[in-house]
Length: 186
Length: 295
Image 1 (cartoon, rainbow over the protein chains, first blue to last red):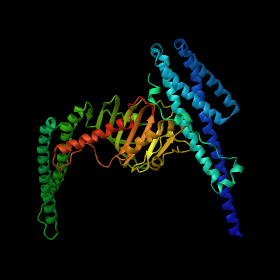
Image 2: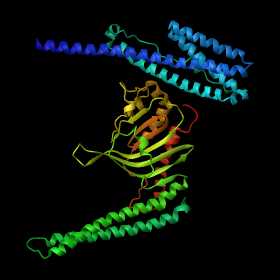
Image 3: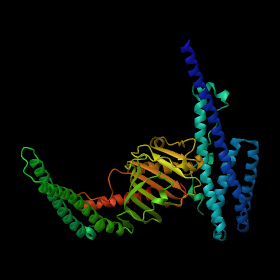
Image 4: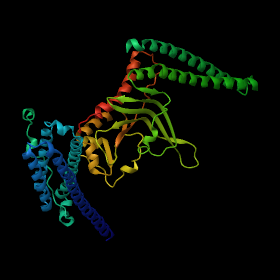
């Protein structure tokens, strides 16, 4: 009788610890996802300053500046709808547009001489580094929660803990293509 | 280098041979005194008077002290006459006693200690990066009431400029194979370890940081590869990144810039010294601390 009770206590303890682990992993994944959002927000907040500085000098680049403004608005809307995949795609588009912007800005010496644009470029670079770090953190959290959801016996408790498998943050198809240097050198 | 230091090395080789001769002479005299004392304090054959016994004891003690002095004198002469000039030829400064080393800057990194012994302070600028390194032995007193100390760290401490990335939270990295394990700095303690994706890095290092993102910002896959390389040079490595500066504590089983009394001083000795110096410089080049590109 005592053995049975002891075994029951041990099994209960194991299942409880798995349940708690599931909740912890779910919260960690949520934290990681929101940390990406924080970094993306930082980058979005930089864009108006960059556009203001550039607007004075880059009068012939209206299309590029308009694209950036539109992408920024779309990003804000996708956050409201909480569509993660769409947000990822837009994030990649903004990164690409900013890269193009700074590449084109090289052709405007007056703009480059402005200290504020150099500071903005440096800040964008730092923020891009933090975004990359946030993505890696998110993918690490997703690995942990996916392992939890897909292995026995924790897979039996995932529903109870509210844990579910999540998608990884993947690179856009554009960024996987080979870069042709001739496209960037005039 | 061959022509520049050849005369100095030849002089030091003579000094080594003289020191060796003096040490051996001192040891012979000292040992003879001890043997004489032992043979004559036999209770059946006590032929030595008290006065003579005291002289023999004093002689034995003095000769052993003299041996230590000759070894110390040779080491110091070697460092002043050769090592200092060698390091100066690279454009760096060198202080034999360790004076001037900014040990206080390591207070966030090192645990509380009661005694520090510093020597061979090397400093300067390499590829635009200011650095400072020193051999250190850090000790702490044993429990209250005990005046003895124990070693909490022995090896090389080094600090370098780090302007590549702006850090809001310090990051502490510790190799798993340390002989002396420093405690985690209080500003890096958090609820969870940083779990990085590189299995080889995870196998060899532990990472502590209050921000999962900040730690990954510094420890990019490229940086992890570079740190893995550095680990192969030392017995254990601890790294502390903070805003504007990176600190290293490298455990080494041998002293740097030390001559060997029983080995001839040849240009090979100079090459070993240069290699010791280059290992410090190599941290800058391997980690690319002078890089303007955030990788």
